[in-house]
Image (tube, rainbow, N blue to C red; front, side, top):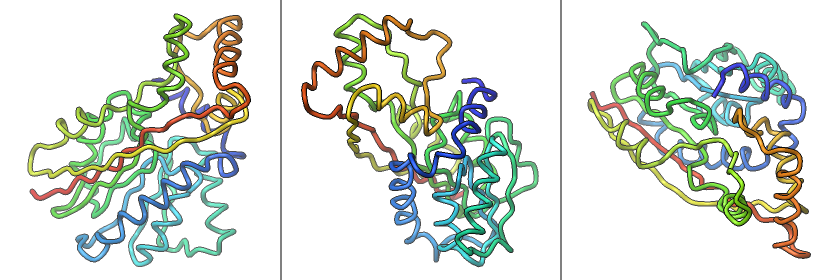
Length: 262
């Protein structure tokens, strides 16, 4: 996916993201809960957050690890500025927080080393998630942890079924394959564990679902798009299949922990 497109989508969504990204907020809390058992065993060192957005998980990190240096990064300057503003509005201490514009796909850690590298709902935006994450994981200290959450490739079966029913191409963004991720990251002294589940979101109609994707910066990025006629056909058919009921959309959620034992 184009880095420019991703950045542009999220920059446009920066002012409304907090209001509409309810799933991402919930997952950030769950990711924070999964981090709690690790906080006492992490080696000394700074924390790197990838794709921080407006800061759902950044604020959780600041409260969980108040004595650590926290490097909060995102590809979008607008998202980072909103993140900084919300830190200030929440009266959170920013003395140990560095806000840094960063494209994780081109980032070279060089001499930087981290006790924790983490990201909430960011790995799905990488063109090659295992390759990018494996490269960044080289910056983990011995005993360090990479902790991630992301939507997996089994997301949106309802949308996919409507496309099959109508003979239309599925234009959703490609999402990471969990088994491929785990396999490709499980080398060089790295231990990988993961947990999967699903969460259903409901919308008044199919069009509301696609509006929601746009409001959180997650609109499809494929060059090939449905024509207006095809899109209208998809919306109408999806709404008809649910009758008077809301449109349900299932997210496949993945929580992944990589420990560097080298």
